[in-house]
Length: 119
Image (cartoon, rainbow, N blue to C red):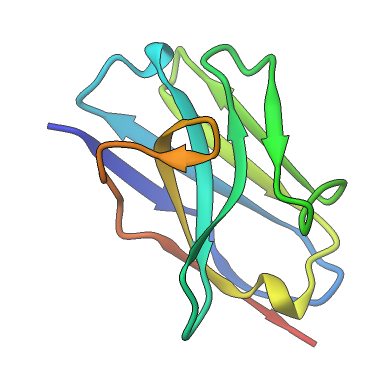
């Protein structure tokens, strides 16, 4: 059974940093590209960042480019999102997912982790 467990969110001031983690279970992690998505109150879920199976290729939404870094550890079955220079508009629930390109696949989602940036 596919399970994705996000953690690391919290309350941070604008300009601060957070590191999100996603633990993957129930599938051959190193076979899949992985991504992060977020959903702000009253808005749809949007793409944030993705990494290919090895971590050698990454893709970012324009809104986070240069501030966020996605990485993965295949041995630990983990994917991370380092978020720097946070802005109030980054406030959202963040989710990880298996992806193809920048689109989630198979509709497997964890519970998400809340990130709140105070201005």
